[in-house]
Image (cartoon, rainbow, N blue to C red; front, side):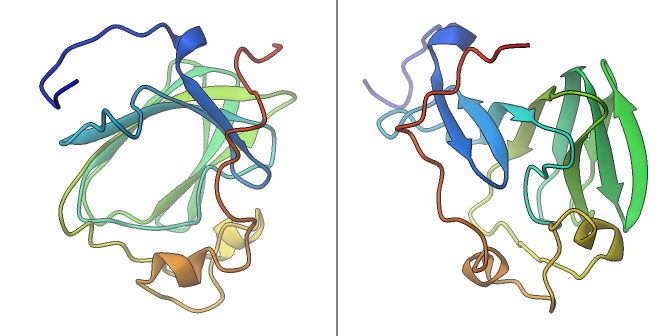
Length: 163
């Protein structure tokens, strides 16, 4: 398959991964078929579980909460989100998303892929309450995630979740 081939994949048949500290993700691409210009996935977050470390990057991102509740931490401020809330994050906006409420939430996440992602991980008091902040600001992804469990585990099935 070339990088220009089109395809259709059902959410229930797409690759799904679970991470012990950052929830689960269903991705629509594979190692052989990577999206060149943007990334898109559906995240499944339990209450209190962050989707990532608090960060900013040189590209815009967008989230759409499909069901459940989440907490958006943006510019070190918490904002509650519920089903059908859409979030647009311009480039260089520090943020993290955390599951909230009584049960899991599902969120579509979309981001631009740039050659220089311009990643930065600032310190955030709000994100620290969820284990999603670095102790010292860094632009090194490996350093930001150094104290977290490594990698997504493709051996642990995730999809479909039990709602």
